[in-house]
Amino acid sequence: MQPGDAIVAPKRQPFYRHLYAQVLVAIVLGAAIGQLAPSFGESLKPLGDGFIKIVSMVITPVIFLTVVTGIAGMRDLMAVGRVAAKAFAYFLFFSTLALILGLIVANVFQTGAAMHVDPATLDPGAVAQYAAHAHDQTVTGFILNIIPKTLVSALNGGDILQVLFVAVLFGIALALIGDKGKPVYDVLESASLAVFRLVHILMKLAPVGAFGAIAFTIGKYGIASLMSLAALVGTFYLTSLLFVLVVLGVVARLCGFSILGLLRYLKAELLLVLGTSSSEAALPSLLDKLERAGCAKPVVGLVVPTGYSFNLDGTNIYMTLAALFIAHATGTHLSLGDQLLLLSVAMLSSKGAAGVTGAGFITLAATLSVVPSVPVAGMALILGVDRFMSECRSLTNFCGNAVATIVVAKWEGAFDQSLFDRAMAGDPAPIEEVEARAANVAMI
Image (tube, rainbow, N blue to C red):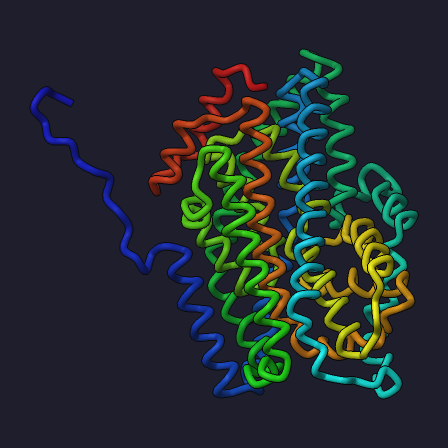
């Protein structure tokens, strides 16, 4: 470039070429079809299910490669433990805060108190399929489920915690053998670039998946089904919004960034989560975007996958809010001791709940089965609108994990402010540039 030459700004893509715009249009069209032609809307369910299966197909290699290369690249295993300790401290504090917030809101508004439902009239069979899975949420079952049958079975089973468990162990082993493991590390690093390029290709199908998923939801359950329990749904959405904008907003401000700016940066992923009711659908893209936004790859690789099982703020708000709604609706009096027991059980049962549709309902069943004061059959009261609350649970979980990763990266000094500012300005660096910059900087 010669002196005096004009600086030409990079050409921006038309609005309709952006993924978030395509997903937004797909959600609107899907909702319209579901409302106007319910039967046809229900028949589109395979589109949503198919897209989630496609994304799930790449989640295992994405997590494995990200975690292994992140840990092996750090070499300093003390740093791995330090990052994990900070992440879990964050998760424990804010997960508990979310549970308490749901408990407070439920006690203040008591949205179910006017229903006066006789527990004897409820059909326990309506929630039997969810209660049947509740035993998997016990502490013993949770611990045993983390450990896979074999090293390889974790990679084809699809369980995030098992994949994370194997990836951490393999990454530590690779770091311990030092330069002898460099050929393996280089292969995995190259494979990681190829897998993320595959993710970019697959995400072009996101509008199709969101279209089918939202058309099915509206077609099957109908907008009208929201009205009967509008108070519960509205209270849950407002509480979750309060948590994201106020609680997470304060955390973001204290760490030097804007929660609204972060939400704008992740708008395509948020719309995808809204359309599919699954935060897991946007997990690969979240890993990629946080790394582009200046968070060190090792931190992203450790915090995001563990957060998907241990930092489910939306699910936690839902659990205490829904449990007390059922108690109020059935006239079940809960003393302060009962509510503290409910809170304690929820703190344990919420850990390990996957970020997929229905997990929150199963976790609620697990919690109520341990707290005999509240009838499990009362879950039938909210079964009809649970799907609509699933979107909000997933969105809140997603936002919580994005904020957690940035906070831990900043705490650890593994954060590139210039990359973050560039991403917030709408011009994130290519992943190749991010990787090249990371290679020239001693991370952590």
